[in-house]
Length: 154
Image (cartoon, rainbow, N blue to C red):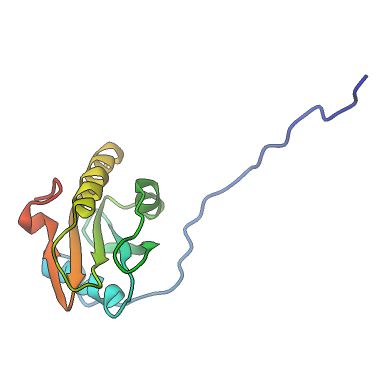
């Protein structure tokens, strides 16, 4: 007769958003792609690898939080919807913007950039968190997917 465990243990967890630091910006609300790009450039300028950000907004279009989703290599980074929307949900965000850099200096979106944008727009629709734009920054310039109507934006 075996006298093994009668019960398996279950982890009881809580989920918390941890603020790492503050960054100050002038605008109270973000009204256009130029203002969004200005914020993104502060985080993405002078990086030697691709970095993908999610910028999370409140219902009145103020920034709740900025989340570094992924840091990749010279020409790619891995982006998964679960990681993009995790901080948005925890920040009680109603919308998000995406941003990443191209260390090559090219503003042209890759097929992968367009594909992940479409996927994230669809995920946002399911979660009721609107993806408002995706900004690529390179050599102190930017490209707005919403302005160009790329990836299901605009």
